[in-house]
Length: 358
Ligand code: NAD
Figure (cartoon, rainbow, N blue to C red):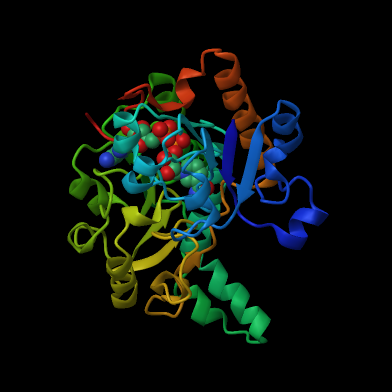
């Protein structure tokens, strides 16, 4: 059987650090195991265009392994060419790079290693919130430049204490972010989600649910985005919604870049409507050199906390999603039932409500 994996290149780093499992070089640690069972295992980072390894090998692969960090975009068109494809495994969390509706129609199962990196992302989001609110990145850059102008930094620096922080999407990651913010004594923690938080989680955060999104954003000093990308969230943070944000608020999006409108965010930062935007996810990955989010700035010349997509690919997370990927493939080979929480698309139907209300 042919197993195809699209991973990012680790180059020298992957040779020096074998725990970089999610790289082309280290192959999620699956190589020996798959070849010992007689399977063909193709691993590549070459994913764009009809002549790419991804688009050539998808035609006869039975299992596709991808990651959200260097997504192999499995479009409807590619699915129609993938005659043998039966199982897509996302090594990580977030399968929006796969046309899930087309997978449903073709009886292709889509599974994620649910929960594998949710703490990794929650920690990153808390760091990004603090970096923006406290104006940390421009302060550090000033020091590297050899300057020392305390007032230039302090004019854009605040305490998180006493602020209102809200999460769009309060599932595994959103609720973990809110839990981690409890000791900061925020004025209030809010969430907007079409599902209510489970009672035990709610008890640990004491967050208030706001059911109207405009009302929600108008109350938040910080909005953190933690919903999957699907038809109901694509372009959600656009000019219209931003007009309801509090002036000078901050946005942290570690969910998916395309949930926010690229140009609307850059405009809002430039105009001062928002004071900062941070995250690690982009509407196309790798982000093109000219992507405005690389260099956009607020009115004080700061407010940009963008990084490459790495919050969910810490070495700790890689160990978990590599093990989880093997487990899913092993279940598939042996016919054992999958962990229901991992199943996004089962045979011919969605098995989760997280990718939109149906
Ligand atoms: P989850 O399924 O536990 O939670 C998602 C929550 O979003 C659910 O409660 C769902 O009801 C809610 N939701 C869905 N659509 C919504 C909408 N339109 N409005 C409001 N709420 C909505 O998922 P999770 O594990 O918390 O992960 C969330 C997302 O974070 C993933 O889908 C992925 O895109 C992203 N993620 C990013 C990284 C990273 O490295 N940056 C890593 C893991 C996950």
